Length: 294
Ligand code: ATP
Image 1 (cartoon, rainbow, N blue to C red):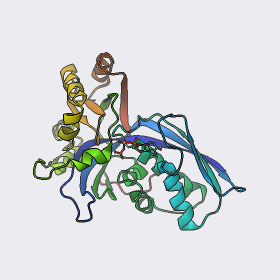
Image 2 (cartoon, protein in one colour):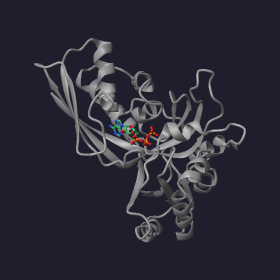
Image 3 (cartoon, rainbow, N blue to C red):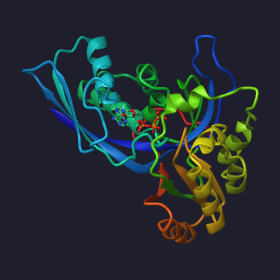
């Protein structure tokens, strides 16, 4: 048996951390969306071998138990006591260590794929619970649709689809270590966000309310180490995007435009400043059995 699952990247429309739990984990308040820049995860079952093997077309990724797809497959196999082996192949399109949740997207794709392949009957909420112990972004990636994400990443509340908007994404050459950035958070210096306003903007399909409430509290921390983030952000605003923001812990920065022609102009202008630039829309992964808050 084999299956191919699409694994879309995510962008943070806003990111805040209200506090840190006594056990050291972070409390999150984020609005995220899935975009049409995706990896593809192919899984083949092997009845004569119990092992999980991972291969990818990217030279930058570990292919052993450190790969998040391996961890996702191992969790499902162990929990259900399934002895079938798996060959996982990842077609990598999402930049690595970029703040776009590539590893989490791949792990979530494995959870969804094995749920279908082995007819496990798990709901998105249950798959998200499996994903949480792999990375805090995996629960969102199980859903891969615009959502409010709270708790330690496990409370995913799907929202309406975004109104028409285009994302121009620039990935500077640096790779950012998420643990390194998270270690530098000082709660005394954080200016918390009005996430409810952004959620209202999405509910009311109000482009201006959305773009005026997009913010990431980690941006000053990452930008202090990677000045390229601020440089690209300013270029995006100068070229005419309605908002520009760092995603996750960076270094990816994206700008938002309401219409395609402006987005295409920004995209072309930015290619003179940054090698890796993408022009994409937000997507909703089909087949999520979830209730959407309208
Ligand atoms: P996060 O913010 O969750 O750390 P990110 O988008 O910044 O995510 P990823 O591309 O997910 O970064 O990579 C983070 C780390 O995860 C890298 O060090 C990478 O080696 C590791 N990793 C493990 N499996 C994968 C995978 N399938 N795809 C990408 N990275 C993976």
